[in-house]
Length: 313
Length: 279
Image (cartoon, rainbow over all chains, first blue to last red; front, top):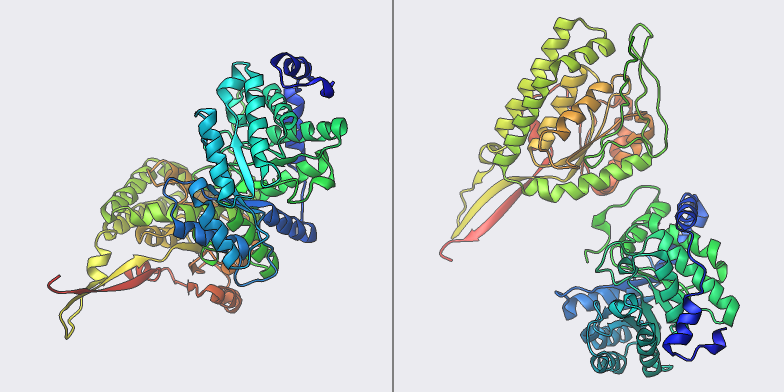
């Protein structure tokens, strides 16, 4: 079936329209049930360190400055300056014009292995011509971005112009080549139904995405548990179909250690432990890292830590 | 024949009334052994949530004008007045005192709120001031709120004891986590209902009920808590609480039914500003 997809509207429709529908009540109940798992003591310590390694430490503000981006890089490399056993984060995620600053600063402090992720293709709305989107992406890659977080054209997707969305992702992917990983942002908060989330996940994976990402962080609701569950199931089924492992990145609204651990439980129970690595699962967040660090201190010191003992972002 | 609608006594965290995260509650009886209520038995996670709520509310409350804080404290007194009969009933049931004594206690508590309401915008003028110095500077000192203050309220006179602990702390601009009396927690929860309808911003006061022994050391050791009123804790715990609190240099005080502006200043910091003259 998959081999018949040539990017044409009809071939995509034939495949995507025949995907089984999502059982909404079932998905929400399963996500809620998995959220009640209790992860304590040594498992919690491991989960916290894993979550730190999976964080795409993000700043996507209009008010971002080079200084803020540099301090974010320093934090991503050494999240807790008082404790060298804390691992570094998965990536630093910034707007295009900050990529070069972030890359240079990471290299200068020894964080060569931390990639810089850039949000491209007219983030967050995706409302620009293809020419602009390609140029946007090219800029980011040339500035040193190792990962590209692109947004899909939700307008086109919702009006049923699936071929157009497919072609866009494919073109950006070929521009990325092996220079940059491609994460495709579905902006699930605007897709209205779980069926659409499943459809868009497959569409992105078929077009060549390395990762599928829930949200831009600019729209609510963002990474809700049932949406992440539906996306993880799509990734798991896609692996069975094609043998390709695609990553998942929930982003937006994950602020506490508890939220992050719930995500890890979802991964473990849906795709299995193979996905519990920063290569296949990332969490897009900014405030989350401080909470993870405070919880880590709590486990280490046996008392609750406070916001005075982590950096102000 | 009508079935009574019994009240569920819950916690007060961040302006909401949740049950304990642990799902636990405990049985409360009056002096004669009759069942009164099942208040929530807070866990240390409820305490953690309460501290997060208090920290979140600090910026707004400490930056509200002193006059506005005074108005809100006065509003608390107004709301208490309207609820006095409920407090009188709870106090006489739990403390085993007569109605007259209970009424006197409630009235004293209301008056105390009004008294501290007046102090809100007077404390900085009374305790601060300009300092004479030998140089071309204006030099002045002002008291500022400390941050999040934990309160173990006095057990004596449940409502009045609560007010003696709570009013000076929030009048000074701090936010609080209050651990209610274990044996007489109902006035604390009813007071929380008063606070929730007095325009007091959410999270400024958070009230936990339950076993003090389970919560108190977590509160004393919490790095986000800047001050601690241990008036209601056993004297034998003083050393241990001070040891736990020393890690982040908490201000720890024990009061003996004190009512004074000095009690406000116990949880305030003095800031001195040097400003060059002629600029």
